[in-house]
Length: 401
Image: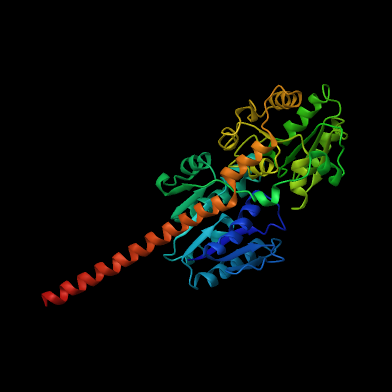
């Protein structure tokens, strides 16, 4: 089976959930016998894996119109080759090439309702409407979709009118070998230069409005009264960086909240391991949250708001990991309870085992590959049936003559 995978940016450029998911997927499919051609932006060093051919769209600083035509030309080039199925992870990257798909089957990995997320994050209304138009066109052409959660399945059906029967739910995966830690919390802190004698909480987020980081910072302002040595480390980049830093300074929290920007792929497992627990304070549209399972794979419990798919991920492990809500008060109460021992947190071994048993990439990639194969198989059967029917009609006409 030959697959064309159309993504956004390569992982080394953008350490977000979508980029990590895409990178893991395209590098793990070839060993299963699936040949992958991948198209992404900001590709610098391509991994050398037999059966994987990564092509760069270039950089994302081009004129929008030029970017559109470049995408269209490049995708068209590879569509003309022997491709069994086209897979999209990014609607803006897929949209320009819709006219060239022909009868090739298209699968979309639905990572969220981008136009609604952009609206919540305060994007320009015109760009929100454009995003909505692009997404509707891509999903209208999609033969099958894969969502990361049942919550995202409901969103896809309700928001875009997508057929429920054409959706497969396959959760996100985590590289358990990469995140598993053999060192102690104190050793991890020492390696990262973090204090060894303070309560430490970590959150790894894109710095955007719906991530709930402003409420989390306000919660720390309240918590420090009870826990004067509390330290929150916020890892990630985004448009809200200056606004969040200003909030931290205005609340006199520079000793208690550190924004550290993007951490490297090597540092991330250590950062999770260094924390007493991590937290995901999302306020809207959390489609899965790879950071949840990354933290668990590192042996570190994670608190999460009852938003989107977070209950699907954390609930089966331990109900007490779910906070009562996403408000400042609810975040503060939950964190204080976890620090005091009043809120039950699973052990390091329980966290690791849960991640391995439910979200290890070998399990996830096998399910995804099966979805691809099923769609390609159905298309081939349909094509063979059509040829057989046409042959039968021709034979009948000849016989009548």
